[in-house]
Length: 456
Image (cartoon, rainbow, N blue to C red):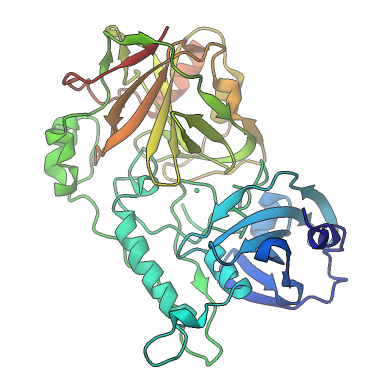
């Protein structure tokens, strides 16, 4: 780490600094700023600067802090950054906690996010991207282009698809990722203004677009995100005329539910026994959000928890439950299953299935049930953290196969990792879930000759 970084790490981050805070993004519950006076060239052609997110009072009360300041290092050539330090402050400006990141993790700048707006303050657009008129393209133009790309990507973004990570089968634009840090380690996530990291909004939470700042000339803010595409013609369910057999007819986007050749769930049998690589779980303790979205109990988890397997690294977005288990193993069904949804940087999904069977009470499940919202579609963020690794069985052997989402639109190309050893929860805990959802499992789908690998 360069001398400049070390110097900034030891500098004060409170209001005693002669800061020049410039707002780059805002919405009713938070504001993102950059300290322009802190922008300095660092080693290796990078730049460092302080940024911050300030929460509205109501949200600060839930989060446990008013302001989060981050010292970030930016690579202007490769459009990437890393977080070097985080500082949490109270409403009175008192430092609550400081975190120096000993091994900073490099993250790409994603279009259309608050991270990009901060990045453009630190690394202004070069003249090489000027228009034919010779004038540099404005941030507003870049935002409009980012909005167009985001709207196109949302049609395939698994974080905006029902129950494998959203609600009601409708695609909704996600808010900019706030605050500007994107690699937090188990810090308080920012509560949503309605209803995906300390460092950014937890995955899976549906948001409205954040309002960008107005231009210096008083022009209107950057173009808003494109409107959400139309949702399903009829709401899908697990029974009746909107049940699994009808999913494909409810919306043309659900055609894979009927025509797909690698659909999930399946009856796992005749696996090829091999020495599969171990699943590398790097899960952090995190605050969480829990909601009954009408199809399941779903929990959105903070960022920084990852799974590495088959040469790829996936981030945990959310997890949810089905009863009975959607998967069967050699014809056997379990009382419940927990699906842990992960995504890599290319948008590929990996779902870890933890089979649940009646036995002794499960402390983590009890914590979740203790915090169930009173109303459907009402998301709740308790002032309590959980360690998701606690739900994993001692034996991490698993089955692996390629499949699909088990809810509309039944998108294929999902890597399924089904842990062989079931985890216990009590009869009472199962009964609690049944008060909300019983029979929310898609029927078994044809295997169609798929290869299933099984740990020896």
